[in-house]
Amino acid sequence: MTLSEIKKVNLCSIISHFGGEIDEKTINFASQKVKFNNEWLIVKINEKTGDWTYFDCRNPQNNGTIIDFIKKNIADLNIPQICRLISEIMGENYIELPIKSTFKIKNNLENEIRHDNTNPVVASKMSVKKCLATADIERLSGWRGLNLSTIAEFESEIKTEFIKPSPLSPVIKNFCFPHRKFSIENGNLQSEICGYEVRNTDFKGFQGEKGLWGKGVDVGKSVDCYIFESVFDAMSFHQIYGENGFYISLGGGFGVKQIDYLCLILERQQSQNLVCCFDSDEAGNKMSDTLKMALQERLPHLNFSRNVPKNAKDFNELLQKSSQNLSI
Image 1: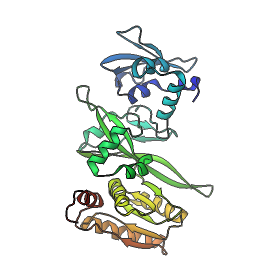
Image 2: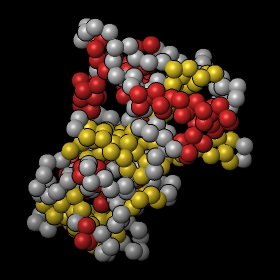
Image 3: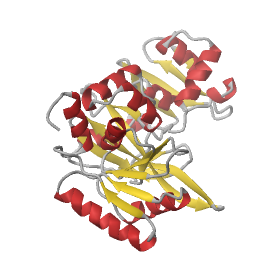
Image 4: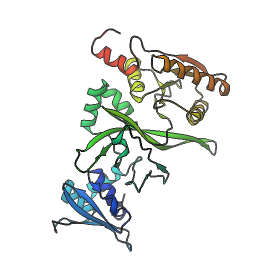
């Protein structure tokens, strides 16, 4: 991004990316209030130039453009370094601050945030999605038993976000897994992010519209498809068995849309084998049977098989048992 483009990036979103909290009462005003490091900043856009500027209510020296905000509040970087930093933040999964009950993905697709009363953290303020930091990788590894090689393989499909449920509560950092919906345009398979599965140690939830989470691993060597209930099971399975192919997670249950998306992937990638890797319980068995019946009607030549984790509820539990030398 050029310097002129950088200055036109929504400064409220950038401040939120670094832990700031917008005053929702001012969202639709020409000047917006954003709390950062316990101080209020006034942020506004120049209607003639389109540049965003800010000033600190208590510190007259803390003001200027997005360049000044980074240099004075984040790190003393030069302009090329700031341009690279903002370009990284404005990546594929850049999301602007929520306006009322919606959030906007970079491709201008708008989706309602699904409010879940059982998961109040998910239903609260959402920040810009960002890539994994070193601390995130270490936390994910310790929490789920995933090694660094596995996380690196799937890192492109793992994001994080900062959540602040209330002004007095501490900031919470969630893991976010992008779901995509699929379509055929001009004879080609197209995909776009439609929502995020959100996970933390004490809850799980969803933002937006459910699609499919997934990634191909050495698909030049195999186009087999492995499907799971959870992203953690998908990554765990790969770590245990090292199979190549497409790894897909439904994020729990599935509906007609997920079946449609899955059929498009299997058809376009010419996958002949689908391995169902749901949980080792009655619900997992039922999901497998339902999926098999739905797919056989549309893909009669697809080879369907079931892989059940031995002496474990799911493949992440199997991975953690094996890493702890427990009976498997």
